[in-house]
Image (tube, rainbow, N blue to C red):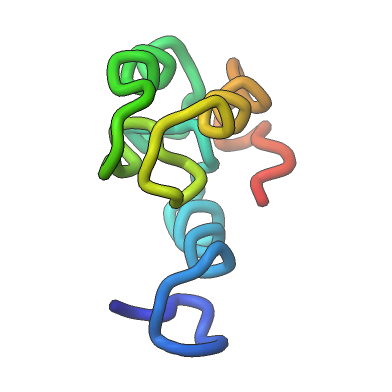
Length: 91
């Protein structure tokens, strides 16, 4: 385990997750393939794995809760059609 934000213990938390995705990788929640586009391919990844447990980012788990559900869909829907230069509300 690591702590990207350098705060708290060595267990990654939401702040670490946001720092990695937005500041380091320049992307946002909803971008499953990290290509800086929130588009149909991201939706397909999420919908294909919807309601699955033990899922990761590439499957559409944007909330770090190990299950793909409506909360993950909302993260994608809020940024659908945006690119890395137009992503808003990344955290």
